Length: 420
Ligand SMILES: [Zn+2]
Image 1: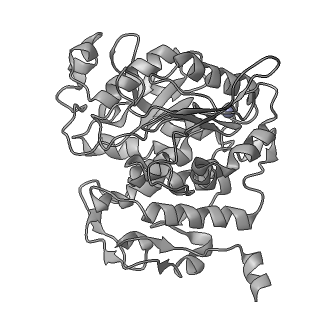
Image 2 (image 1 turned 180 degrees about the vertical axis):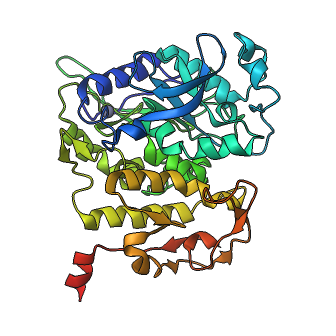
């Protein structure tokens, strides 16, 4: 029954999510378990905090090594939105560190749902920015934001809340009554003697805009996918469990699954799985962005995703284009919002970046062009090289200094020579 439709229930079947996890864990060992680099330093984090689901408190771990037994964790990627939410501060960090304290907090629905889901999936630790970074401590924020590529890159799984517009929206389908769309079944051939019959099902994806389009899926059109911070969270993650408003999706280096279609089979070669769902709308986003950083090495050989310098720069160009399409609540965050991507690209290639521009192709990278009208980013940022209290303006020569979508055309030296 591979590649056939499947009626997705109103409430997500947790056993199906566990099945996806098991398939990836047991079948993609050389793919999804691998990190994108061999740098042992980048595999440890000096200090990280988690929501501890065993003791129900916020726990700080020093010199964290994700390979230690019991240290597998899940990260949450979501949209804060406008409602004020519970955060970790220098005033409440002691209280939130006490066993059982989280049960007394009024948490936003998305975080509360993520906690429940992570417990059901059998993990102990969950990373959520609001509760794992001291929000009123610039020093802690700078240190933790500098760890973003590791936080999402070392996570066993990232839960992406691509439903709703803020942290009160929850994970659609986790609780009864949170999914409204009902699939319709049209029987073409009734089941009978010797025949299983044939039915058509309405899809969970195509009805939003009324027409099919690679950029018209629920995931593509979600508020989550429009936000600046979430690009690096997606790009770093090895495995993503995505909640759109109508169904849950799984994407990892070895496969793509969704509730409404049967893709899962333990004997299916990961290569087949990678090409088969490539035509699905969501794959355009995930394969053009996500896997650039996830599967560089497979058993010591270069991955099929980054096989040449040209492809590496093509990914960089696409990441810049995708990033500049996104919005930030504070445009001063545009520097920090790209830091994790720079960090991961550096781990893969050794490339250094300056205001988002690669040093080895700096002159090429200056030839970025606006796709639509741009306006100047007048906000300021705090560079890691400056003192924490000194905020600086964005330079006008960098695409980071402007707001609006841009195209970059950085190429390898070889392809430039060929073009001449
Ligand atoms: Zn996998």
